[in-house]
Amino acid sequence: METRQITTTVIEAAEGKLLRRRSDKTVYGKTVYLGYNYYENGGRIEPRQDTPEDFEEFDAPEDNETDVQP
Image (tube, rainbow, N blue to C red; front, side, top):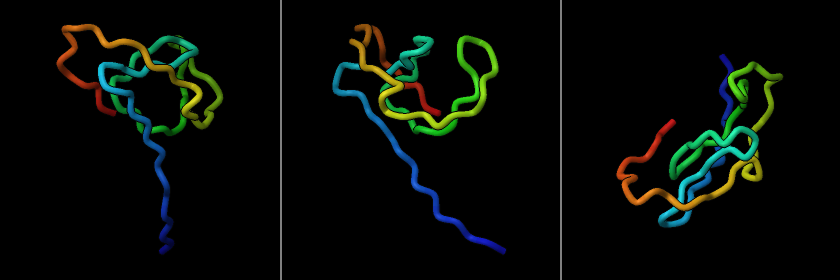
């Protein structure tokens, strides 16, 4: 048996903001656990590691009461 330790990078939007992926404008909510991206714009892509730079903050709508979780 082999044991591996994996580090996860988490990004969180500032108060009153949400996160969306820059390339296709998919909204992820207030918190994003970075991992591998396999799909963009509805199509399969070569897997690649997400980075914080792949996401942007934007003002949350006033009626936004829930958070999107992975």
